[in-house]
Length: 414
Ligand code: LLP
Image 1 (tube, rainbow, N blue to C red):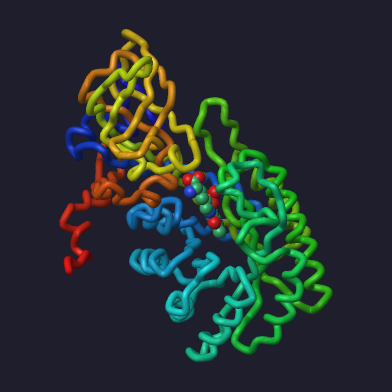
Image 2 (image 1 turned 45 degrees about the horizontal axis):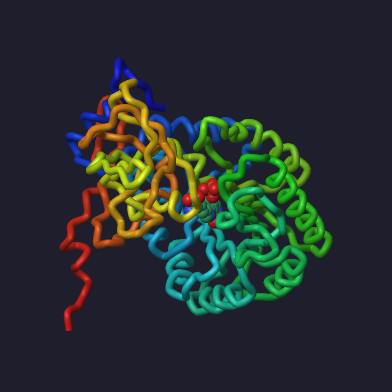
C-alpha cells in the first residue's frame, strides 16, 4: 500500500510530503488502486456464485468520488439514511442494487426510497413493516422487503460493534421472525423477498459468519415449508482488516468459499454489504506535529488531527499504526500522540515509539479509510478536513476543507 522510497513515504506514486505541502494538514488521503483491488478481490472471490450482488456499505466512507469508483466496478450500495440515499442518487446508482438498512427509517426516508425504486428494505421491526406497507399503499407501490433477523451470534469483536447479539437493538430475534414473515405475507403492499442478518464489524474469524448463515439457511427452509419463498439472502458486512501487524484477517477467497458452499445448498441470490474491508486500508490521515511537551515522565506529541477527525481511538480504544513520512533512526523515544481537542480522551496512540520527531514533522495515521471521515465532527468548532484521492501519480481533491462560515451558517443568534 505505502512504501518508503529512499527515506520518503509514498502512496502509489505520490509522496506524502508533497501531499502535505499541496493540501495542508490534517487531511484524509485515499489510494484508488487499493479500492479497485479490494473490490476486484470480492468480485473474483464470489465468481463461483454468479447470483451474488455486492452492495458497498456507504457508512464506512461515503465520499461521492469513492462511491463512484465502486459504482463503476458494478457495486450496489447498502444505505442507512435519507442522506446516504441522496448520495447514491447523486452518483447515479442503479436503484435495483440499493438496499436500505437501519432501525429508525422515517416516513420521508421510506417514501423517497420507494419512489427511487430500491431493491429492498431490510426491515428491523414490526412497526417499521407496517409503516412501509402504509406508505407503499399511499404511493401505489409494492415495496420489496427482507427481514433483518438477529441470529444471536457472538462475532468476537469489540462490544460496541457487535450487532447480532440477543441484547442488541438490531433486527428481529430469529425465533420471532417467523411470525413477522407470516404477517408480512398478508400485507398487500409488501412483497417478501429476503432474509438479512448483520452480526458485527471487524470480524477476524470466519466461524461467526458460518454460524449465522447456518441459522439463515434453517429459516429459509422453514419458510419454504410454509410456502414463503425467499429470493435473497443478505449476509451483511463485517469482514475485518489488518490494523496491527499481528492481525490476521481471513482472505476474501476463504470467506467466499465458506459462504458459497452453503449458498449452493440454498440456491437463491446472495447479497453482501462489505464496508471496512473495501476502504479501511485505502485511507490515511495525514497530520503534522504542532508541539512536543514533557509532563512529569510522559512525552507528548501534539498533532493537528484530533478525535473530531478520527474518533475510533477515543471511542473504541482502537489501534492505528503511525509512521513518519520521512524515516530516520535517531533518538528513539516513547510518546503519547494526542490531538488538539479539550478532552483527556483525545489520544490517537499511547506509548508509541518514534524517532527524532521535530515540530512540523508530518505523520501518517494508517487504516483510516473506514469510519474515519464519516464519523468526524465539528467538536471544538473545527472544520471537517479535506479528502484527497490518489491514483498513480495524480491527486484529486474530492472534498474541500470546510470553512468556519459553513459551520456557523445554520445557527441563529436571537
Ligand atoms: N451492513 C450493516 C447493516 C451494518 O450495520 C454495517 C456496519 C455494515 C453492513 C458494514 O460492516 P463492515 O463491513 O464495515 O464491517 N464505527 C465502527 C464500525 C461500525 C459498523 C456499523 N455497521 C468502527 O469504526 O469500527
